[in-house]
Amino acid sequence: MEQSPKKRLISALQGKTVDRIPCLSVTQTGTVELIDRTGSVWPATHSDPKKMAALAFARHEIAGLEAVRYPYCLTCINISS
Image (cartoon, rainbow, N blue to C red):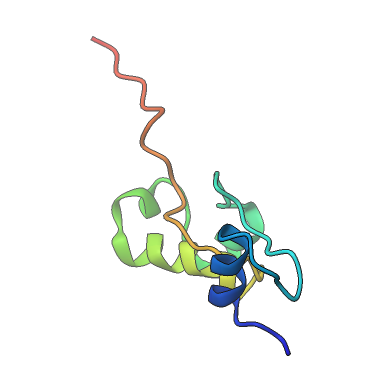
């Protein structure tokens, strides 16, 4: 029986049996193709929650990845004084 993406990911994280290995990216997935298909262009998407959500969900809805996260990381901001 095929597992749902959520069940598959949680089962894999818990070390349980899965129907197939889940695919996800814990880093950036704002690819040119997903940006083009969602109309979520940089830098506008970075400050627009609806565009950011569209780009985040595209990784599941279009690319088929099991996990969704916001597409832009804020941990690498370069602040010059």
